[in-house]
Length: 177
Image (cartoon, rainbow, N blue to C red; front, side):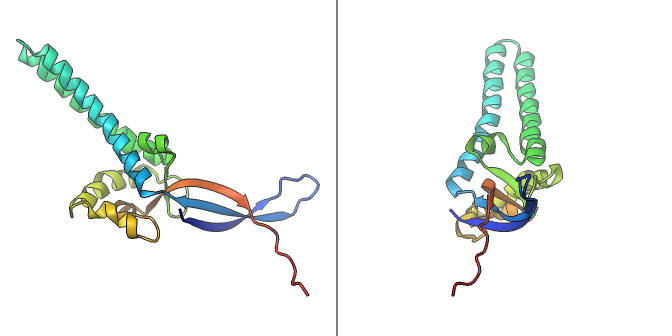
């Protein structure tokens, strides 16, 4: 697992000593297997809604075709609404979809922070289909990329990280001699 380290100055928590201590912000790159797991969980949730609505449509639709068709249409609409809420709004505001929350991953801008709704929609609804087009090679870029970004991350200017912690950097010692 690789980490990107960015240093910032944060005030010391000690009340008696008001000096500033450097801290490093460490972002751990998300492993490919966890990213796949998060994607799978997101799509299982969406598929479950479609499956249940189809089952209800088949149960209702015995003699009354309209009732079964309506239940199926309601399932399609609910699936689309949940997809937009999960992959667009939730991911944009918090940086986490249901699958990423479950696996402990987070989507961030390259500069840090949540991606925003527009960037999350660009990533999921335009970037994912483009990543799938050339035989899924857009997803596999992450395995050979030094930054851990796939095609949809490059398109949206995002990165998926596992942890984001602030760690204290030890003070530099003077030259020995």
